[in-house]
Image 1 (cartoon, helix red, strand yellow):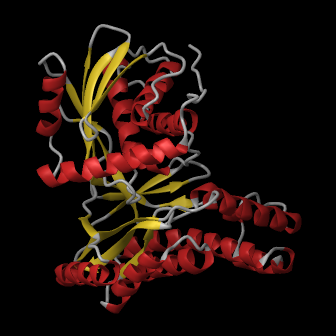
Image 2 (cartoon, rainbow, N blue to C red; image 1 turned 90 degrees about the vertical axis):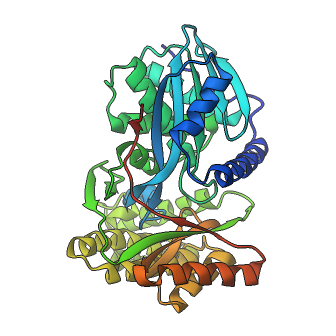
Image 3 (tube, rainbow, N blue to C red; image 1 turned 30 degrees about the horizontal axis):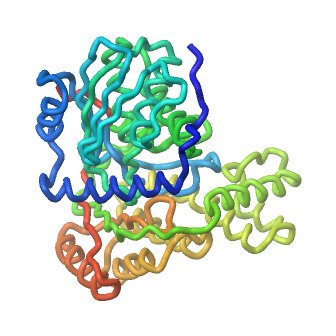
Length: 420
C-alpha cells in the first residue's frame, strides 16, 4: 500500500502553535480537576461519545532525559527515562474504514478515512492518522476504530507529549490488528516517521524510543549512531528527581536548532580533513577540535566544544550510576547546564535563574532539560531538602517573574503497554 506523505495545504506552524497552546491550557485545566489521569477519566468519555460499549485501553509515557542534550543529531548518546505521566487511550474496532477520534483534553472530535491520502487538518488528529498510515505501510491490516484519549504530560516541559501519543496508538494498533508482530523499536520509528511526514517536525528517535522501550526503575542509554540500547537501574538512595517547569517558551526568529546542527556538521567536516575517520562530532575529541580552532568561527568552536563534552558526560554519568556516585552525577548535570547556557546558547534568563537557585540551595545537580529557550530544569535533590527546595524555588521564581513554576515529581515508569 502506498502511503501519502504530502502535508495538507492548510497546515501551517502558526495554526499548530495556536492549537498547541489551546491543548496546553485544556490539559492543565483537566489536570487540576482530576490531579492524576486514570483509566476511568478516559473510559467514561469513551462510553459517552460513542455507542456505550467499551474497548481496549492502552498507555504510553512521557519522558525525562537525565543528561545528553543536542547529542542525538551528532550521533552521540542520550540517557532518558520513561515517567508516570503520559497518554491513555481507549480503542474499539467499529467495522468501517473510518477512525472516529475524540480528544478529551481539547473536547474535539474528528473523523477521517484510513484510505484518505490527505488526512485530517486538525494537528492532533494528524498524529493518529500518521500512525495509522505508517502501520498500514508495514503490513498491519488496520481497520476503522473509535477512540478517546487524554494526557497528563505538560506541554512545553520537554517531556514529549507527542511521542507519548504516537507510541500509544502504534502499540495499540499493533496489538489490535497486527498480532504484535512489529517490534518496539519499529513502533518507535513509526512515531518518528509520523512527525517527519505528517506533522513537519524533523525530530530524532529518542522520545519515541523511550516511550516504547522504557522500563520501570531504569534509565535507558541509547547510542544514536548504532541504535544500541542499554538499561541502567535508577534506584537513588537518598535522592529524588524534580522537574521545575518555568512555563516559559520563548519565540525565536528563524530556526536556532537547524542552525546549530549545521554548525556542528561544518566543524565535523573541517576536522575530517585532518582526521578522515571523523564523520560526526561523535568521532572527535577536544584535541582534534583545538587543532582546527583557527579554521572555524568562535561560535562554531563553542558549539562543538559543548557537544563533544556532553557526549563524554553521558558516559561519565553512566559509570557514576554503576558506582552509586550521585554527587558526580549532579556535578555533570551542572556542567551540562553551563555548556547549554554559555556554549550552545540555548538557555534563557528564567532557566538560568532556576539553575542558580538550585546551586545556591545546595541541590546536588540541576540543568536545562530539552531543547532549551524555555521549559524545565531537571534537578537531582537530596531527599531531606526536597520539600525545602520546592518551597524556595517556587517562592523566589514568583517574586522575580510574578508566577509560580510548576514542580513535577519524577517517578521512572514503564513504556507502552495495554492496561485493559
